[in-house]
Amino acid sequence: MTVSSAFNAFKSSKSVVWKSTGRLQQTIAGCIERKGKGLHSGKVSTVKLWPELVSKGRYFDFQPNVIRASIEFAEESPLCTTLCKDGVKIRTAEHLLSALEAMEVDNCRIEIKNSDPEDFDLEVPIFDGSASEWVEAIELVGLKEATDHCGNCCEKMAAYVNEPVHVWRNDSFVAAFPSPEIRITYGIDFRQVQAIGCQWFSVTSLDNSFYSKHIALSRTFCIYEEVERMRNAGLIKGGGLENALVCSASKGWLNPPLRFPDEPCRHKVLDLIGDASLFARFGSQGLPVAHIVAYKGSHALHSDFVRRLSGII
View 1 (spheres, rainbow, N blue to C red):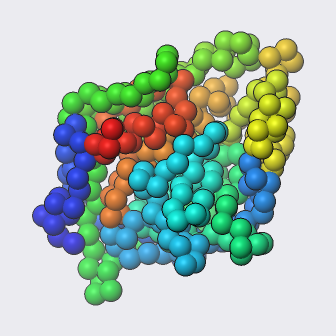
View 2 (cartoon, rainbow, N blue to C red):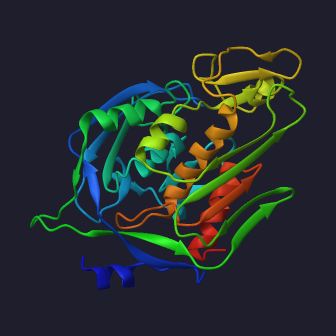
């Protein structure tokens, strides 16, 4: 795909303009295989990441079904990001997609299986609740330039926000402002839980190294007093102190120590990057070049933000 044809392939809202990043699209240099338990289903699945051709992007392969990691297949679901197509669901994809986006794995076939081939409701393993398992695997196998069958490369495109964009629900919002580089400012407010309280975390220069050291390690978290309600709703069947931080309003953290004082807020940034990756297409960058400011966000609100960028809403 030439640069000019790539420009024509990218259609979004008038708030963004697609430009070349000056870098070539990449893929992983070898296969990655990991097996683990899903946070919400409790089911064990095996995920294999395969190198992919240039401009193929990232997609889930559950033969004979293929689901692109794209916002058009995102389904609103509680406490995770779910992709759905033709009756197949891939739940809790955000940590894997966050790692792929931040580590610049632009093209990748994601093969996922569980023990029952007739079960079309699959979930990406949660591991320790962070993205570190995926980041370490990507760093171990390495990256290479993605090419087509003839050995041709393609420049990587990115969406630059050229006017303010925002979405909101009640007192929560995600906004993006024009910026020459990616910046993220995220706030959370759990003032009913003193050990968490109100936190802010800012990223002023996002690259592979910063992500792997300061974001990927942050784990998902929950409030202990909400656990029974979530389990009654059929969620967190695979959850435990080994794969999530649990905080009690009266007793504080039940499984310290934290990896960072503001680990919950950093994890929200991890989630945002994973959800924003759904804006990617044809091997492009998903995360827009902008100053993104979010407050009390959720997977649903992150997805609405991507839909707004895409011109869907």
